[in-house]
Length: 580
Image 1 (spheres, rainbow, N blue to C red):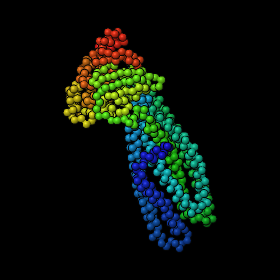
Image 2 (cartoon, one colour):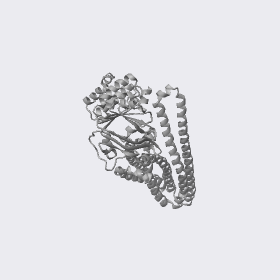
Image 3 (cartoon, rainbow, N blue to C red):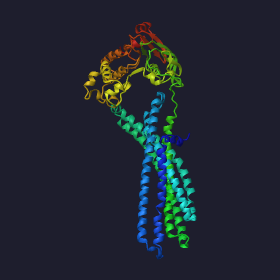
Image 4 (cartoon, rainbow, N blue to C red):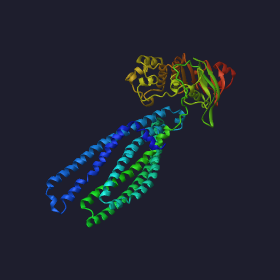
């Protein structure tokens, strides 16, 4: 399906408003075609040498002037209403595309987002999506009005003087050839601009979001140079497009002037020969402008459409992307889970030739607390991410209460899981909204109780606005320990039967870690829990410890048993690299 047909689908809900706008546009074109006639009548009937028709000029000339004002006023009203309707429809379609695009990006798996900069996706939602409005407002509607104006003008001009009309149209094939020649270059250069602008935004966001690191290592000059290089490439792309636009405008305008000059010369000969009146020549000149103006408008419309098509294509690239973690056609929604998790012959790779898990077979009983140990890159976090279906196994299956998680809707599956990460992700809203993120309908009493159990209520109440205090971008107004407690409070409030903990204390100092672990032990009680950590002291006394090495499970048992075996766990525990 072509880009333009897909764009039109977004305007189907608004066809009524579009049809009304097109009808009013027709009325406006008709009024515009009438505007030269009052002056033609004045020239031919009241300014010609014969005195016979001049007797009533004091009555008719003011009326004709008034008629011109009235035609202009009515045309202005029709044009105002039409423009408003078309802009409104364009903005409604833009809202729909932006929402669809953002919603689909939210639904795509982490595999898609891992492969792309988040800023590029943001650029497509915020900027590339505007192309759908450009294609409509500067494309379809302009084309309709221009074509109708061209046809109406052509009919009137032929009736006035068909020879002059054909002469005036002689340049049209040249104009069409010029449009075709420049259109392909404009689309290519517009695509380049979109990509470079996205890169500029990405560079700026990356540098500013990492400002602490930049300052810490004194890399301000380096970051500025990097940004300058990206911005310079964008500048050069814009200059190339500007040069193409200027060149094309020069060619088109020159062709139109040639056509106008030829018409003036031949029209003068016709007036001198008496086959055309002066008034008719003047009105013909006005219609020639009306003929060339929509031609010029169509030229710029074509180039605007080519530029907008580049942005629309980038939007539909996302919407055409196949979600590799989608619900099965037979997927069912579950309302509760006991928490039994099975990994059956699970292997997984982020790429076909790069596996990080190999033939994992594990059984976690309901309410069992299991620790995952191993060096960095052993596969612990990857295993956790398979439970809520952030990714699907390459081979094998993950089972929840005896059912393949691919046969459970993602929404209902994730409702049964609470997650606490090493770096707690907070949104730039209030403390209250961050805690309630996983359960927005929670009462104040429930929210405060969750904060109290997470040992967060005390420091929250000491903040200037309490639970209504903003946390800053990514929780920048809070310490690491405070952010972690809010993340734990969020998990308490969700009250899910399955808990996933991914390095929940590795970024904390020993004192804060000890306090947070007390909170986490309270959180784990009565839930099926998987906790991945480097700090073996935090999992040493758990029900079961699974030891990973290069994507495989190599040991399994309680901490004391594993030390007695003298294997990998014992060596890690004794190395001092993993403090207790």
